[in-house]
Length: 212
Ligand SMILES: [Ca+2]
Image (cartoon, rainbow, N blue to C red; front, side, top):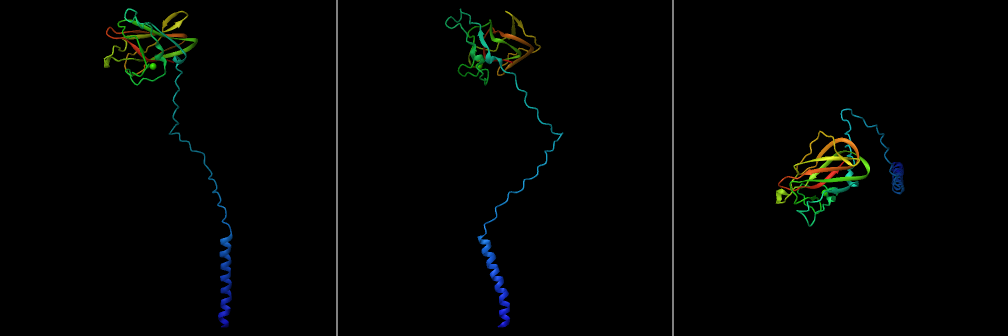
């Protein structure tokens, strides 16, 4: 019995200690989780093999937005009821889906005039510096209509009260379904005019006309 008691006291002490530790562990609030130390960031390595892409060069503003538009009237003998041509649809900023995009008021035309030269002009109260013009032609001839792209056209800028052709080596395009763009020597002017030659078998019209 004495031997057993001697062994039992340390065992009992161990047991009490264990219980105490257990109780302590149960009653001690969990330590607040510590935030992981922030990783020390290394400066991004630059790779000369992959140069940064150049941002798109912004286009010059479209001066059509601030221009007043005036267009030649329809020939009165052919269009007595509505000779006046309102060109505002050429500068509404609406992008055509095609030359036959027939959304309401997307374009204007000189139908039924054929085999004539018509004109439209933009005018600005203050001079603008411009070097490019773009025309998107109206064409409904493939769908039974009477309008086609013109035979030819040219652009003139205003000097005083006169009109002078812009200087360009570009082509005055007459293609469907696209902007026909012409770049020219920059000019500072209060006006730009298009002279548009209609075909013998069709009238002409404009979806959208931009100037930059
Ligand atoms: Ca338009």
